[in-house]
Image 1 (cartoon, one colour):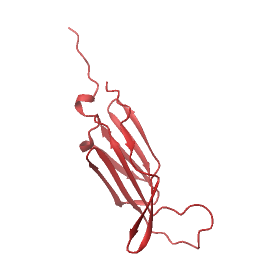
Image 2: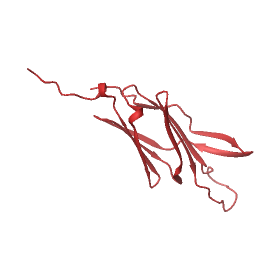
Image 3: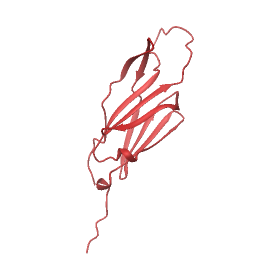
Length: 131
């Protein structure tokens, strides 16, 4: 069995600010976790306020890139306490060599994105027949 424990590593920072049409857009790194099992890795990413149409997920150069925009919400006043709510989320994860990024599957439901990334065939456990 492959013992690669660094199956997913974040390359991003916690927050970022981007300019869009002369307004400031606040991006945040979403909360996420990954569970490894014999068939691959299951990721769970928390994306409150994000609809499927506003979510972009792609694999490039052994990295999983996530870019999501929250549905617009009207502020009821000026923020005096706390942090501003992010208007979007960005996440970049490095996928280990043992993961098959071209075969991943993703589903968004109730603000939770679930991504299953299988192991490449050579990294999957196999039964050895004894003669």
